[in-house]
Amino acid sequence: MERVDTAQLKARIRREVLPKRLAMSGSECQAKSLVIQEKLLALPEFAAGKIVAFYMAIGKEVQTKEMILQSMAMAKRILIPKLYRSRTHFIWSEIRDIEREMCRGDFGILEPQERYVRAVPWKEIELVIVPGVAFDLKGRRIGFGKGYYDRMLTQLEKTCLRVGLAFEFQIVPEIPQLEHDIPVHKLITEKRVISCLLKQG
Picture 1 (tube, rainbow, N blue to C red):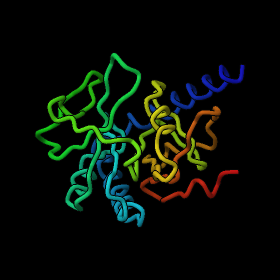
Picture 2 (tube, rainbow, N blue to C red):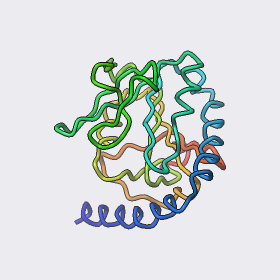
Picture 3 (cartoon, rainbow, N blue to C red):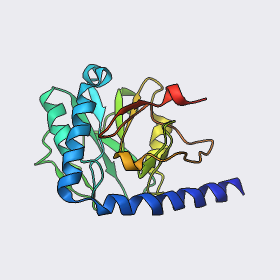
Picture 4 (tube, rainbow, N blue to C red):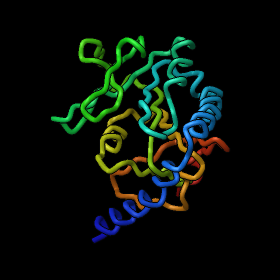
């Protein structure tokens, strides 16, 4: 019963938050994303990381392309997920030329072309940038419900820093959590950087 109630609550939060994201203009989305980018690149943990895993934004998610280009300019190794419709997981692939090596995958998301796949072991990832529909101050998140990132977060090393990116209106009072859910360590919005683990307990 608890699992059903949790699923219903998460669905309700999606219905409340997603229209707000869709209502943003493209210029507002881009401007806020650039502010979030500045905060991310200023993190000491980001500066220290050498292997960073990013998501490729779709629609009006926090935009990541410019973050990736800036990270490459900082000589970081950048990983992008390669998803397979026939499987229930993805692999992390190192990307070296975001313009030449990417294409639309099975889910309409930009990902590495098969010939440019350079799989990197999960244990090597030092910092992962996590998308979400909504987050709370304890770092708990709601995705689109497919579970890719939920499964991924359980496989990362405990030393890997998990950073969620969101617009301020995506921060909600509380997100129901199941036993297997993994929170992010930090949240970055256009207004603040939140250390989530300090708020847990």
